[in-house]
Image (cartoon, rainbow, N blue to C red):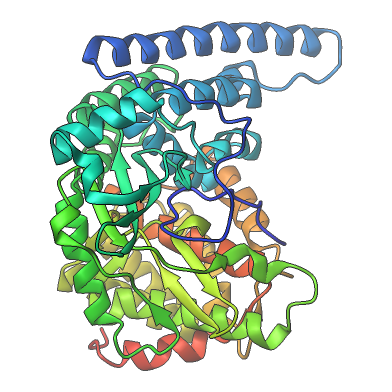
Length: 467
């Protein structure tokens, strides 16, 4: 199975062209009233779309055409497309939350719903030139143009929080400038609360989902992503962490041109990571890059306790000449406490050993299940955990591209969680870890990598006491 090609969203440097001409510039709504109005319009469109879909299904049922469950009418692909279109126009926290739902909801929502929302992981419309110049003037002051020998006003990429421009300073530095959309930082909490209210109203998630806790976790992470000074610190910290990995590169930041809303860093040459999936690329090269990325993910969790939790294709570049991977975008960087990581080390060790009793015990410890849950719920939870951890249980190289695991786990998760009510919604604190785990699998599948995940993780588990 191979993942869908995701156009670049946050790249700092590449040999690719500017955003497609079909992506017309669109002004970013800045006021709280304007953004609230857009979410209200989305709610109205979803309500009308759900009503129409419900009527269609009822008519189909009565005529014997098999329309399905009218109660799930809000979860149609058409409604998901309506929601995605509104969130994409808003950008900021609203669009980012939609991206999270498209991954986080994979095991709990119908495939057609999450597939429709997946367009939010693609390129966003750039902001108009006047808005761009306004941000640069506010951050750098009057006469900001004098700092640059060249500034490309057409962005390299545009995503949910900001867009990226290439520039050369008067002293000859080749830079990529990540420029935040105006009003995004101050609108995050309102965006998340408003979108969460719509999802709760329309019952998009199962009834036991803790929507306020999910919204709070999303808000916390997005506030961090919108602070480019914090991201600059994370980038420098991460460069130190991976200094011993010869297959990885991290760009330097430039503090004299970095502000809370503009992040200046080296322009890094490279090709989109997904080109590794093209015909003719040697399998050994795919496997080597896949191994570097998989080892990095395990080190992030079990060694660094610091993880870049957004594995979008656009956050990586690949240098064919050296075979190195360039790591980009450290806004979504999360640090885990020792107790959290220790719990995952214990459950990972139990999964690899095939010890279902220990998996059950540690699933309760993490919050995937509760001691008071009925036996059938506990067993269903264990089954799903063992299933999604298939690459860890596999001996030897696991062929990610040939695997249909995402389809199987989505089908099982949706059936157990939505139809049978036998699964709990994962704890909010696991949201971004899950995003990284799912995204990493899809990345390796897309580039066609075969990786011995079990051999990579076992040495790292030795750092943690068994239990």
